[in-house]
Image (cartoon, rainbow, N blue to C red; front, side, top):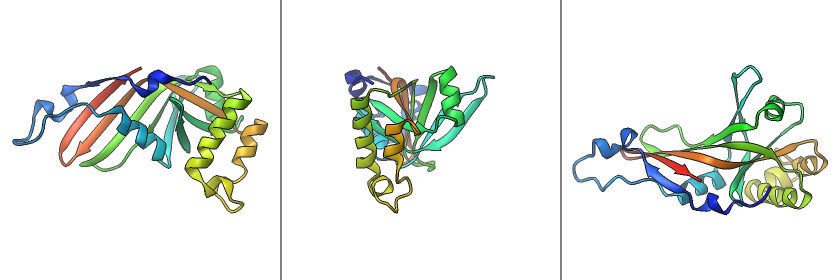
Length: 185
């Protein structure tokens, strides 16, 4: 999967309809779009993301995954026989999301795009390195939750998909100030 430099500097737009900009609190600072660097930071550090794929009959399939942000794309993996892999074989459209469950604090990020399988050996090694750097002993230690995952990815027993964002959304909450940001790539 080639790098995606545009994924580092998308156009950001605040949607005032769903932000505190329509109903600002007295004395509050101007409500502005969330910076993409905040979304990237969340994608790099979140331990769990949710992958949404489309079943052949159009119904959605949603499942938690471990994921990493690397070189302008979000990456996750799945076994070849799992529902995600079967769905993506027919329809690559998907979304990855992560965030918090708080009503008043945090940031939720949704990345929409088309998942493409990473098959190039050099690119795959880079992505495996990104997973190992992010999840550390969970992947690299013999006692780790996902130990053996790197070798499974190399052998094709665990398929790796990259999602280059077409559009992403950020839903920020900071002490009662709400933002809805759309990033276009």
